[in-house]
Length: 214
Image (cartoon, rainbow, N blue to C red; front, side, top):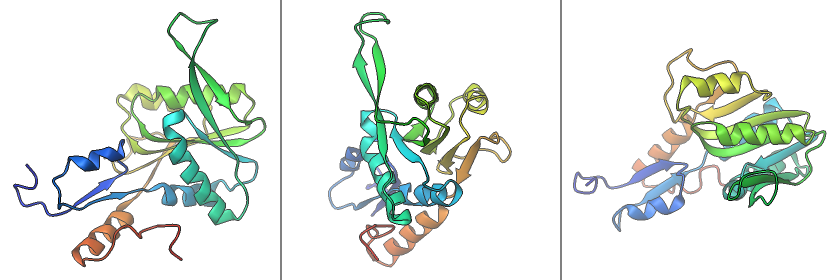
Protein backbone atom coordinates (compact mmCIF):
# COMPACT_ATOMS: atom_id res chain seq x y z
CA UNK A 1 0.00 0.00 0.00
CA UNK A 2 2.74 2.46 0.91
CA UNK A 3 4.71 1.77 -2.25
CA UNK A 4 1.53 2.30 -4.28
CA UNK A 5 1.27 5.69 -2.60
CA UNK A 6 4.78 6.51 -3.78
CA UNK A 7 6.94 5.70 -0.72
CA UNK A 8 10.51 5.26 -1.96
CA UNK A 9 12.38 4.70 1.33
CA UNK A 10 11.56 3.86 4.93
CA UNK A 11 13.28 4.82 8.20
CA UNK A 12 12.40 2.75 11.28
CA UNK A 13 13.39 3.16 14.91
CA UNK A 14 14.29 0.01 16.82
CA UNK A 15 11.83 -2.55 15.46
CA UNK A 16 10.72 -5.24 17.91
CA UNK A 17 11.70 -7.80 15.29
CA UNK A 18 14.26 -6.94 12.61
CA UNK A 19 12.59 -9.36 10.17
CA UNK A 20 9.73 -6.85 9.83
CA UNK A 21 11.92 -5.04 7.33
CA UNK A 22 11.26 -7.90 4.93
CA UNK A 23 7.58 -6.94 4.58
CA UNK A 24 8.46 -4.01 2.34
CA UNK A 25 8.56 -4.48 -1.41
CA UNK A 26 11.89 -5.26 -3.01
CA UNK A 27 13.64 -2.12 -4.13
CA UNK A 28 12.44 -0.01 -1.17
CA UNK A 29 15.40 0.62 1.15
CA UNK A 30 14.58 0.22 4.85
CA UNK A 31 16.97 1.85 7.31
CA UNK A 32 16.73 0.53 10.86
CA UNK A 33 17.97 3.07 13.41
CA UNK A 34 19.19 1.96 16.83
CA UNK A 35 19.29 4.53 19.66
CA UNK A 36 21.31 2.26 21.98
CA UNK A 37 24.55 4.27 21.48
CA UNK A 38 22.77 7.49 22.51
CA UNK A 39 21.23 5.82 25.56
CA UNK A 40 24.56 4.28 26.55
CA UNK A 41 26.17 7.73 26.38
CA UNK A 42 23.41 9.09 28.66
CA UNK A 43 24.10 6.48 31.32
CA UNK A 44 27.86 6.89 30.97
CA UNK A 45 27.52 10.60 31.74
CA UNK A 46 24.80 10.31 34.40
CA UNK A 47 25.71 7.05 36.18
CA UNK A 48 29.26 6.14 35.17
CA UNK A 49 30.62 2.59 34.99
CA UNK A 50 31.97 1.97 38.50
CA UNK A 51 30.58 -1.33 39.83
CA UNK A 52 28.19 -1.38 36.88
CA UNK A 53 26.49 -4.43 35.35
CA UNK A 54 24.24 -4.47 32.27
CA UNK A 55 21.30 -6.89 32.51
CA UNK A 56 19.13 -8.44 29.79
CA UNK A 57 15.65 -9.14 31.23
CA UNK A 58 15.27 -12.30 29.13
CA UNK A 59 17.11 -14.28 26.46
CA UNK A 60 15.54 -12.27 23.65
CA UNK A 61 17.28 -9.10 24.81
CA UNK A 62 20.79 -10.50 25.25
CA UNK A 63 22.00 -9.10 21.91
CA UNK A 64 20.62 -5.64 22.67
CA UNK A 65 22.09 -5.61 26.18
CA UNK A 66 25.42 -6.83 24.78
CA UNK A 67 25.48 -3.95 22.30
CA UNK A 68 24.66 -1.53 25.13
CA UNK A 69 27.51 -3.00 27.17
CA UNK A 70 29.97 -2.70 24.27
CA UNK A 71 29.07 0.97 23.82
CA UNK A 72 29.71 1.65 27.50
CA UNK A 73 33.04 -0.14 27.27
CA UNK A 74 33.99 1.88 24.21
CA UNK A 75 33.14 5.13 25.99
CA UNK A 76 34.84 4.24 29.29
CA UNK A 77 37.72 2.03 28.21
CA UNK A 78 36.96 -0.42 31.03
CA UNK A 79 35.30 -3.83 31.11
CA UNK A 80 31.60 -3.83 32.03
CA UNK A 81 30.12 -7.16 33.15
CA UNK A 82 26.79 -8.45 31.96
CA UNK A 83 24.05 -10.71 33.34
CA UNK A 84 20.75 -11.98 32.03
CA UNK A 85 17.55 -13.57 33.25
CA UNK A 86 16.62 -16.98 31.89
CA UNK A 87 13.14 -18.40 32.10
CA UNK A 88 13.06 -22.13 32.78
CA UNK A 89 10.17 -24.42 33.55
CA UNK A 90 9.98 -24.78 37.32
CA UNK A 91 9.69 -28.22 38.91
CA UNK A 92 9.10 -26.88 42.39
CA UNK A 93 7.45 -23.97 44.15
CA UNK A 94 5.13 -22.97 41.29
CA UNK A 95 2.27 -24.52 39.40
CA UNK A 96 3.06 -27.00 36.64
CA UNK A 97 3.89 -25.31 33.34
CA UNK A 98 4.88 -21.97 34.89
CA UNK A 99 8.26 -20.43 34.21
CA UNK A 100 10.72 -19.49 36.93
CA UNK A 101 13.13 -16.60 36.27
CA UNK A 102 16.76 -17.54 36.91
CA UNK A 103 19.47 -14.91 37.14
CA UNK A 104 22.64 -15.83 35.26
CA UNK A 105 25.54 -13.66 36.41
CA UNK A 106 26.65 -11.80 39.53
CA UNK A 107 24.99 -8.53 40.55
CA UNK A 108 25.66 -8.39 44.30
CA UNK A 109 26.87 -4.91 45.22
CA UNK A 110 26.50 -3.76 41.61
CA UNK A 111 24.66 -0.86 40.01
CA UNK A 112 22.55 -2.50 37.31
CA UNK A 113 20.95 -1.23 34.10
CA UNK A 114 18.11 -3.37 32.73
CA UNK A 115 18.03 -3.04 28.93
CA UNK A 116 14.85 -3.77 26.93
CA UNK A 117 13.19 -2.50 23.76
CA UNK A 118 9.60 -1.85 24.89
CA UNK A 119 7.85 -1.11 28.17
CA UNK A 120 4.11 -1.72 27.90
CA UNK A 121 2.62 -3.33 31.00
CA UNK A 122 5.99 -2.99 32.74
CA UNK A 123 5.70 -6.47 34.25
CA UNK A 124 8.95 -7.81 32.80
CA UNK A 125 11.18 -4.95 33.92
CA UNK A 126 9.56 -4.58 37.33
CA UNK A 127 9.80 -8.29 38.12
CA UNK A 128 13.40 -8.44 36.96
CA UNK A 129 14.15 -5.40 39.10
CA UNK A 130 12.80 -7.24 42.16
CA UNK A 131 14.88 -10.29 41.28
CA UNK A 132 18.04 -8.19 41.01
CA UNK A 133 17.46 -6.50 44.37
CA UNK A 134 16.81 -9.90 45.95
CA UNK A 135 20.19 -10.93 44.51
CA UNK A 136 21.88 -7.99 46.24
CA UNK A 137 22.27 -5.24 43.65
CA UNK A 138 22.86 -1.81 45.19
CA UNK A 139 21.03 0.38 42.66
CA UNK A 140 18.93 -0.29 39.57
CA UNK A 141 18.06 1.65 36.44
CA UNK A 142 16.05 0.72 33.37
CA UNK A 143 16.27 1.57 29.69
CA UNK A 144 13.82 0.88 26.86
CA UNK A 145 13.53 2.53 23.47
CA UNK A 146 9.74 2.62 23.35
CA UNK A 147 7.89 3.68 26.49
CA UNK A 148 4.29 2.69 25.79
CA UNK A 149 3.16 2.57 29.45
CA UNK A 150 -0.19 0.98 28.63
CA UNK A 151 -2.01 2.51 31.62
CA UNK A 152 -1.52 5.13 34.37
CA UNK A 153 -1.15 2.21 36.79
CA UNK A 154 2.10 1.22 35.07
CA UNK A 155 3.59 4.66 35.66
CA UNK A 156 2.50 4.49 39.30
CA UNK A 157 4.21 1.12 39.72
CA UNK A 158 7.48 2.49 38.36
CA UNK A 159 7.20 5.51 40.66
CA UNK A 160 6.79 3.24 43.67
CA UNK A 161 9.47 0.75 42.61
CA UNK A 162 13.00 0.53 44.01
CA UNK A 163 14.46 1.68 40.68
CA UNK A 164 16.31 4.99 40.58
CA UNK A 165 14.62 5.77 37.28
CA UNK A 166 13.84 4.32 33.86
CA UNK A 167 14.97 6.03 30.66
CA UNK A 168 12.88 5.84 27.46
CA UNK A 169 13.19 7.70 24.19
CA UNK A 170 10.52 9.99 22.78
CA UNK A 171 9.42 7.62 20.01
CA UNK A 172 6.07 7.45 21.85
CA UNK A 173 4.40 10.78 22.59
CA UNK A 174 3.52 11.63 26.18
CA UNK A 175 1.85 14.88 27.13
CA UNK A 176 4.19 17.31 28.87
CA UNK A 177 4.14 16.73 32.61
CA UNK A 178 2.39 13.37 32.34
CA UNK A 179 5.46 11.28 33.16
CA UNK A 180 6.55 10.88 36.79
CA UNK A 181 9.97 11.86 38.08
CA UNK A 182 11.24 8.29 37.83
CA UNK A 183 10.54 8.14 34.08
CA UNK A 184 12.95 10.22 31.99
CA UNK A 185 12.84 10.82 28.24
CA UNK A 186 15.72 10.99 25.80
CA UNK A 187 15.11 12.74 22.48
CA UNK A 188 16.08 10.85 19.34
CA UNK A 189 15.16 13.80 17.11
CA UNK A 190 18.82 14.52 16.15
CA UNK A 191 19.29 10.88 15.16
CA UNK A 192 16.16 10.87 12.98
CA UNK A 193 17.02 14.26 11.47
CA UNK A 194 20.48 13.05 10.46
CA UNK A 195 18.99 9.91 8.91
CA UNK A 196 16.48 11.97 6.90
CA UNK A 197 19.20 14.39 5.75
CA UNK A 198 21.40 11.52 4.60
CA UNK A 199 18.50 9.86 2.79
CA UNK A 200 17.57 13.06 0.96
CA UNK A 201 21.23 13.62 0.11
CA UNK A 202 21.54 10.03 -1.11
CA UNK A 203 24.22 9.24 1.46
CA UNK A 204 24.57 6.10 3.57
CA UNK A 205 22.44 5.97 6.69
CA UNK A 206 24.06 2.80 8.05
CA UNK A 207 27.13 4.70 9.26
CA UNK A 208 25.19 6.80 11.81
CA UNK A 209 26.54 6.00 15.28
CA UNK A 210 28.34 2.96 13.89
CA UNK A 211 31.06 2.04 16.38
CA UNK A 212 33.32 1.11 13.48
CA UNK A 213 33.29 4.70 12.22
CA UNK A 214 35.90 6.93 13.78
